[in-house]
Image (cartoon, rainbow, N blue to C red; front, side, top):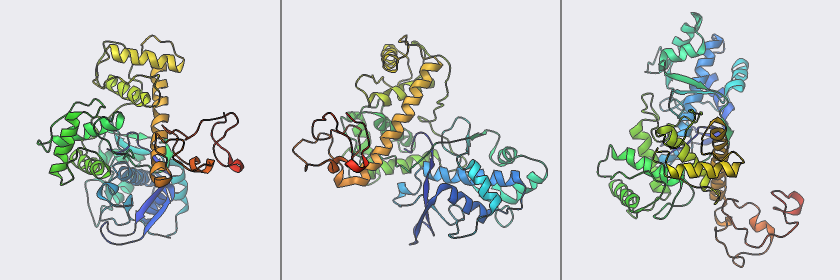
Amino acid sequence: MPVIIPYVPSTITVHMGLPDQWAENVTVSFPDYVKNVASSEIYPTWEPSAIRANVLAIISFALNRVYTEFYPSRGYDFQITSTTQYDQKFIRGRNIFENISQLVDEIFNDYIRRQGFVEPLAAKFCNGTTSKCDGLSQWGSQALAQEGANSMEILRHYYGDNIELVVDAPIQDLITSYPGTPLRRGSAGPDVSVVQSMLNRISQNYPAIPKVPITGAFDEATEDAVQAFQRIFNLTPDGIVGKATWYKLVYLYVGVVQLAELVSQGQTFYAFQFQFPGTLVQGDSGPEVEVLQYMLSMLAQFSDALRAPAMDGDFGPVTDRAVRTYQVWAGLTPDGVVDERTWNSIYDSFVTADYQLRRDTVRAQSLRENAAPVMARADSRPEGPDRWDNTPRLGQYQGRPMEPGQADGPKDRQGGVKV
């Protein structure tokens, strides 16, 4: 399952050829990638609204590739290719048109999506003359612009009236959806909910996979479903969701929901609207309550003071206690009422926690042998602060007691929190 909240990667890696052919991988900043593709695909003399519409389509398509982990889930080490047979035209070292460059700098973290969906639209396009497609016609967009259409009118003409523009999406380093360590019976948390959600959707196409409740707890039923999935797709049927099983789930999920297509069914479990839905209280039910429960469950992974309610969509006593506990923790009135202030506080904490968790997971993967085990003994590692300088901080015991005056990192570049 891809990252819940779409983001704009600071860099993107382009494979300079067909996916299964040997070719160089080139990593560039995301804005530079968009500028290159736009300068390769369209003309700088076109009407501004046509250029803007095409740039938004280019951005959205590329972000869809990143969001769905389209190529990494197939075992490739890049996010997109340079060939129009599969993706968008990227020409290494080409000149960039000034007006396109200026526009991209303004809108590179804006994109389009279907209303009610989370994923960036797989905004496919073609030139409209030598090739035609179900998406945007590049020359057709110019004709509409000459008739006075603005960029969103052009995009809705080709992609439908149910698209919307997302502006100022968060920018961050490229991250992977794999949680970093295998999930197995006894695991709990949002990543388990992701697995359960993917299994349930895939089971609609592969009925031999039993459906499981989305509880966030990796129980026997989840293990049985994982084993059934593994047997069908020729993976070791051990019931453990390691990296191979995780990305096979992502690959199948993206395929059956058609997230990488214009006709995408959109997200289901994660087709969340994180905007304030109106006041929620005990007795309410529905998808808005499920969103609330999901965010609270995520936050409970970071603090023993918080509670993780079941994600069943019912605002019952357990969810009420979880809300009140959060309100005390956040310094809000502990009345169990999720008004706009409480909702926004939970959401802000959730976004911060999710980002930090995923960033630290990526650091753990990059460190490999230098990352310390969670329950490391004080005598199981060599002495010296450098051993712990760059290890992920979440859930990590530093290996020795903390003392007054201690700080993270070498003395010449101390960071972190002083005690």
